[in-house]
Length: 187
Image 1 (cartoon, rainbow, N blue to C red):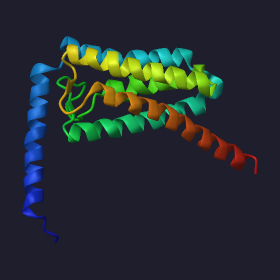
Image 2 (tube, rainbow, N blue to C red):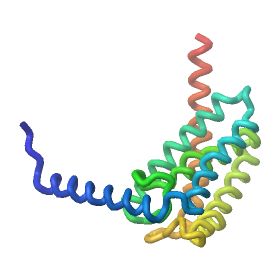
Image 3 (tube, rainbow, N blue to C red):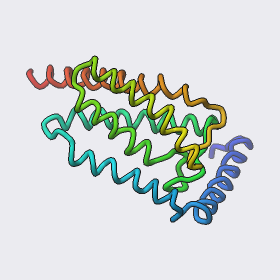
């Protein structure tokens, strides 16, 4: 049987205590607070709006973009949380470091709707830039003001190019995947 180094055992023990503490804190200070209910709304409302507005004819392309965005922002949020760049005092569920409603609903739905309604690159990039500015300089500070987001080693203006890059790169990726799909489906 393979043995683990003592540091690995220590990490598991510390992580276990951290998880238990996080669950206890969530049960005592987060669950059913107005912040928790806001997170519930931020998870449900965007998908409800998207379900009503989505262009069913372009569903595959739109949902593909949303899946790429969801995967990217979740990974980046985990990384930022692990590097202690920011912290979320209120969470929908206690076992994940990221802000699930933002990563799983608000951001993917916003990017998908922009992709749907702005098919030309010029208008798409302009709208993505406006969205990036609103999220970076309005939404993130609003979450800080509400006590739902704490920036530790992060500045709001760092987010702007990231939001912009996600929008541009993910649209390019979707277009590449669709082109490959079209090529193979014609064979």
